[in-house]
Length: 167
Image (cartoon, rainbow, N blue to C red; front, side):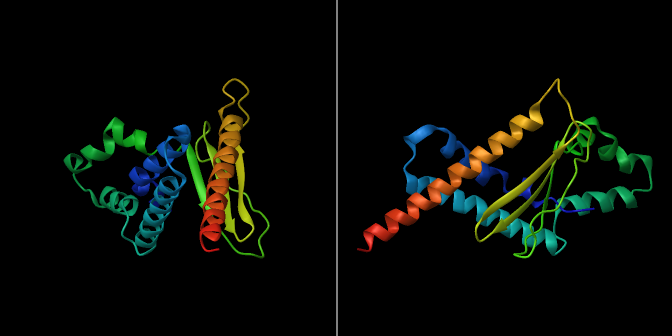
């Protein structure tokens, strides 16, 4: 079982995504600050998950320890089952020597995203069961690429502005 720290940084990520998708209304500095706050929240939550302080392992353990049927009520609730349907399953593995690797979807209608954050860029491999009727995996891949390009442009613009202010 892998911890899922990404969901815990959701509020910070949502604020950054909202700022990025509302056009030019938000100043570049504010967008970058929100993006950095989301990244910091993710890193903090990933560290906590790596130390065993994550909700997934807690719930898994409680489910395994529940002896009475009444103790299992939460785990039999349809809303709890819904939270275990991961439409997007991700795996992060970064090393400068790695070029790529694969990661598959964990549900038939989902996608698996393997990603690496390296000095020269962010690399992602998106895998999915072919579903011509819905085509959402192709759309997801396109939007992921678009979002990463927008974040790169934001970071480069901020770096250029900072370099210009030092002259």
